[in-house]
Image (tube, rainbow, N blue to C red; front, side, top):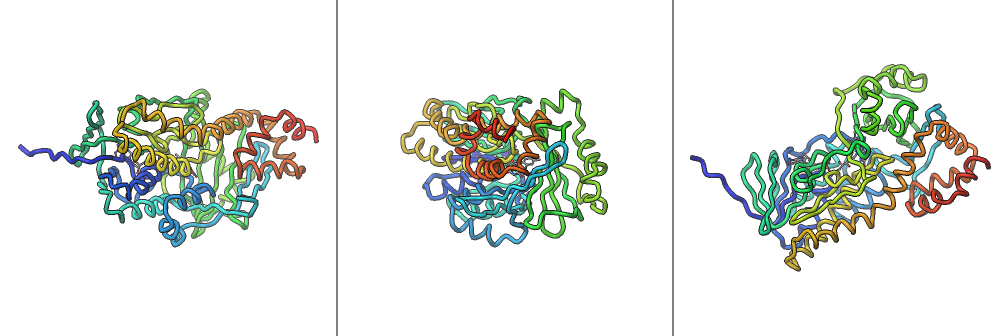
Length: 411
Ligand SMILES: Cc1cc2nc3c(=O)[nH]c(=O)nc-3n(C[C@H](O)[C@H](O)[C@H](O)COP(=O)(O)OP(=O)(O)OC[C@H]3O[C@@H](n4cnc5c(N)ncnc54)[C@H](O)[C@@H]3O)c2cc1C
């Protein structure tokens, strides 16, 4: 009979997306014996809008200068200098990206290429062993160790990091986390060739329609005359209104007066792909005895914008810092690991709460239409939107002041 090999590590990271890669890169110099397991072989696709916010670029810089150099050298990306928001009655407002009071840019880069930059960077570190094509299907902990079963054999570690995305096996097995449709979105993506009439500075476009609020349809320009097109909608609304998202997306781009001309000669380059977005609008237990959850496995996606890459990287980095403390103090208990939850929510909860509020406000189409109309006319509101995109603190201050709503509606 064939003997199963048991491989032993200090830390095992399940998932090599932005969260897992960031965690591994941060642990590379720690002296710990680390393994990263991913069911895919890189480069691999990830269903996503491919929009990398200014925050993502800042997060890369916090990981390593070499990584920033590799990202800068990546050919298959374009800079985007702002966002164009279309209200349900299809008026729009342009909001440029500003960082530290200066014009700034994010990027749109297919995840096939972006994630591979991170993955190849972590592979350069000798302290990390990577296993690709390694599907983890069972995880258990006891007071002495964590054990994992995979198609590549059995593993054992002192500590495990769940970085295995929205459908995380680690979160289901150890965190007992289930889908809550009030705090979860369904998303579809399809790459197109030949969509026309983009903003000259490659602004990303969010199109809000009455029937899909608080979700939106997005069109993000890519290199080579391509575009990332998709739709995201709160899962509870999808179920309640029995929405067929695929049909809704196709109907909007082929029949809506503002979109059909732009898609007249456009061709889909793939079949439509779907994936879940676990939103950060509800606090979860994201750690326990010998485990931490990061990125989508911990549900850290912004509930308004649907962005999750920056928080995935941020949480991977914070997890690595916490793991180092666990080993220094030889403490892997659920109680000790609560400090990780506290640190994550200290950094992110303020923004999630504001985004949840925005998500609820825009469910009133008349208010949304009015806000976009006013933003066209009012320098005050334009300035607010620019500053709010750049700073959570600013967003918090203004949105929680009743005077803001008064000025927006009546001035
Ligand atoms: C349709 C859609 C559009 C989006 N658009 C944007 C956007 O434009 N900008 C943005 O910032 N965010 C966007 N997001 C969110 C973003 O994609 C995620 O927040 C981000 O990918 C989270 O990174 P992660 O590392 O946590 O997980 P992932 O990127 O999902 O990586 C998880 C990794 O784990 C591996 N894995 C999974 N299960 C196992 C297993 N059992 N065993 C071994 N390996 C496993 C997978 O192969 C994968 O490589 C979008 C999401 C969706 C669904």
